[in-house]
Length: 403
Image (cartoon, rainbow, N blue to C red; front, side, top):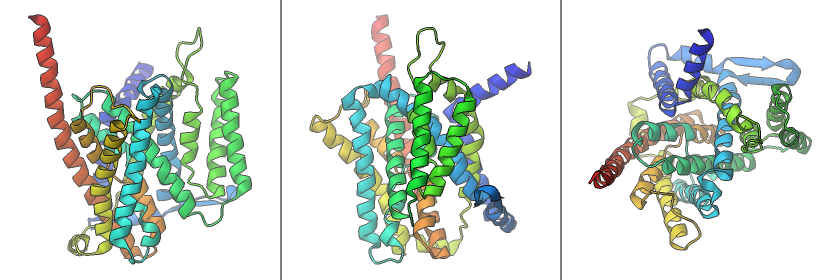
């Protein structure tokens, strides 16, 4: 009975609506907590240092959730992307090209807009990277809750776009915010990736091989000065997605069923709890629409992301470089482009890295949070409208078949 209950809980947590709801609840709790009379307790919690002296790791609890737990989420995202690239809809080269091109447009355009508006503002020499990333968890949660009647190819497009988008953002982080790259540690991480690939090639199944490789890869990237969540993406992309004759399921499917409930039910909500605590008051809201720093972030996310994703997608399709996702129209893609303006995880990280002044960091975080909420509401409204259109078409086709 206990095993059955655990299995049912895992299945429940694998649904994106539930995982997304937990994420949003955790973010709301953090916001309410930090802006309550007990806000100092929240700050004490996030700043508490949890050290591992033998490894010379001295990270706060907020850093552990950001650098450690998010690696688990990115592992699941990497597994899903690998499956779609090899055996899913993105196996078609032209369809695979579209989210990559859209992600590039969705990174370059916000960066240009943010840099143009914030030029000369302290910290904007690197702060232009703040609005470049789409938050996978938030965007997919909104899509799951409001876009259930939109064709399934919408999720594939958004997931692929967001993963490539975050990979580009992580590369930017490595380039812009790495004080000194340790080549030896980077080689150690690459050796772990090679070991993971070899174990997959040799059809080794035991977690006793894969878990140490993943942990060492994470630590090596951390010590190399590269954002360690990249370890999760790399391991996911190196996992086999085609099952052998006689296998009940492919390794990627097996790992996803095992890890996704942990990611959705624990890792991502905890990250949201530790990262969403942004103090909000009247002065902050006043500065949001008068100071150039928050205006650069708001315009970069809302305008840059939407225009960059939609514009580059439309151009690629018109030029014949890429194919439009199955059963999706341009209006559907516009709604998904608006969801692309939900910048949370990596945007908050870049804000902390790029800006030295604490007041500027808090203002940037407030801009990210407000803009992400606006994008989620606008995207939800558009998706609900498009869902009604698609449902009406399905009903009409069903009526024709009956006649």
